[in-house]
Length: 318
Image (cartoon, rainbow, N blue to C red; front, side):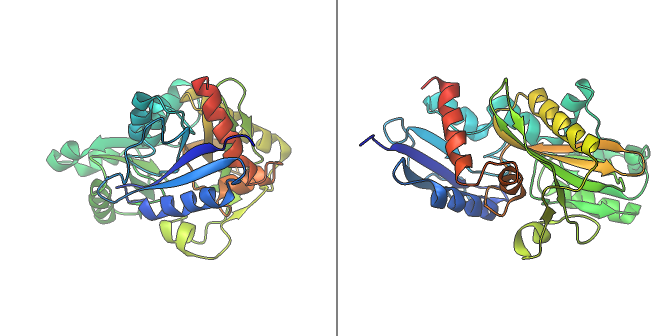
């Protein structure tokens, strides 16, 4: 019998997305076939403490199912690089660029990838300015205020006045020292999954998020039992192909590897597509839109972890 591969599944962590990470990790643990893998759950607590010190003799490969700062921003990836342990997903640079909404948009603009009108500023600039309106005056109401480094719709506000803007910025600054403000675009929210290595990644069929209100907040994503996506999305064939092409361009722009989910806004009246963001470790339960998009593309959920582990070994040359 072939010796099983030891897979350390990292979960939890000190970010605000701790609980989301635990759910994703449990799904991975449940689906890894025991005849091939020996999975070990490594739950990092909310203070960032590890229950065990990872070493190559304890794990053949690491599956970091961590969301948000600390786990999705290149920090853990850099640690694993120093340990010389193969790991699933994007590397240090791609993770850091994708996690920071400002750096991500700079990268997209440099590659001529369309993004929505936006501005950004630091906490110091916000606290010391005598003209708050001046920081956002290039945009129109409504706007979305977001911390630069956070996911799962945490710390985000939709604002329609200066009073709401100030409250939204204060909320965002509770999570990060840099804030991005985006102009609202009346559009459908579309997603596309990317899977593969540096040179020949594949894009899934697009899906469409079902937004119950003005936007899809944390409660709608993770606490509600309501349907959150239609997969595949009902789109003109040309638009669906443009979504897939832009998803691959965004993935390559950040130097992506393994997996990512690319989120879009599709403006039906004009036919415009905007890349909203790229997530290097999207929610990974079987209910998550990433997994469902790939299931609709012919890759069922149980195959996803296996393919990602194979990609981790391929990158490391193991």
